[in-house]
Length: 289
Length: 301
Image (cartoon, rainbow over all chains, first blue to last red; front, side, top):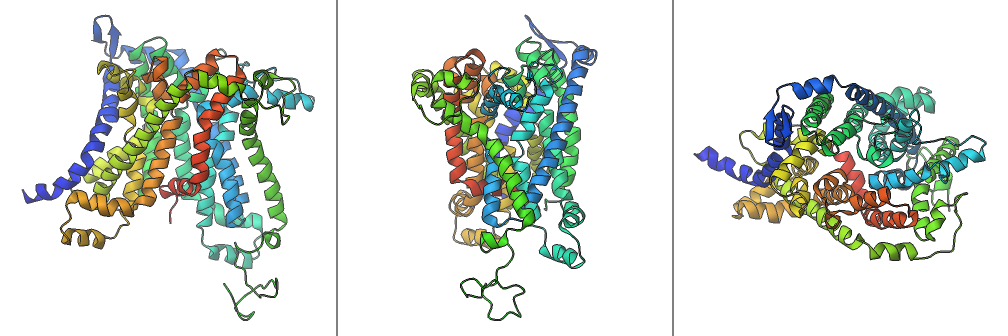
């Protein structure tokens, strides 16, 4: 009895948040699992066993979308982190105030709503009056159908994503670099290391925990890309930009095939969970009880 | 830091004869710029300008005649400003969308600050069975965005008969795992003595939380609040799914629909500028909170 009374305040403080988490995050996950074994007909929900999954795995569009998502994720994450790392190494030696200016300049585009970013880039990419083709024309390259060519469209979306979403990465990396004790740097300098060696041999290895964290977070995020696809291409042309996230949306809210969409969402959840397990490993080092 | 003799100070720049010793990372800009820094400075500036230029162009065009946005070659000239686009914008649904967005973003902010800080407090300072598992369950949701649960969440809200109401927009966003995580991380650092003192003075549990924990936690609550506001202001997918009628749309959904059915670039860009303005204001006003918020969970030390 005493133990319950002692534990009670903790539970009461948790109650409102936990009710909302349970009702609108956990319940939907379980409901999604249930829906993935059901079909929605005029008579209501009907159990259909694994038929939705059979449909999903037998569907060439599904495999294609997984491939597109993987290409999108790998290129976005790798290119994004390499660029962020270069930017962070360049920002690091500056004094505080100058660092702040650069951090803000790179971070602002990444807090802009993705809808607005997409509107602007749709305009930059416009085949006839877009700024990018105008610039290409300037240097004598013939205009590119940025979003209309099935071979190029995905890379146009990748280009936009990489360009506008590095703010958080850069901020975190610069902060991390600033946290490296100066002793290491001085020791390396005394031993005659040049700036390049200092970066690669001393600082890069010390960034490993931060980089692991960023890789996981970026990968999980990229795997679920939706809004840029919705805004820029609608999955086209010729389905060349239909990622798994967009495919789920299409199945559920255009074809109203909720069962199949749920089965696909479950597959996506499993993939994301596998990536997330690594997340817990890296994060648990930071957490103490 | 002032040094009297050169023995303590490895390098002395004798500026104005004050014999000041500048540590690394402070001092006059001119003195500290070295060759590689100049190169870095130029490359970083070009990159930053290239990233910011599209936003500048958006704002510029929203103040120009509607056809200016689709001119070839692109019209980058300064001048010929007009408010036509904004007049047209303000005659439309923009006020309704803005108030919807404000309702959503403010509720998200308050929900995150109050409900999640209560949860964070329990995780940081209270002992009870099942704490660890509950905490990890909540943190694990960070990995699942709306993207994954959108179909069942939509069905659930529809079955509850709430689609196209404020409830549909608000219920799923009042709490966020990140807010719980951030408040817990911060509140763990509040000294136990402070709480002990409150208990001695006979504070009730709620009073301890409200009069001691909340004021002390203001730095992290500000971060949680700003992040909550901006995340909800920017959110697109859930408002898109949860609303059908024009009057329930948020700015983001409204803008997307304008973009998809409109060829009036001037109008769309004015809408984008309108929607972006609060973000920029918040960003400029609370910049340092962004840096802190991002690095709390991510960087050691």
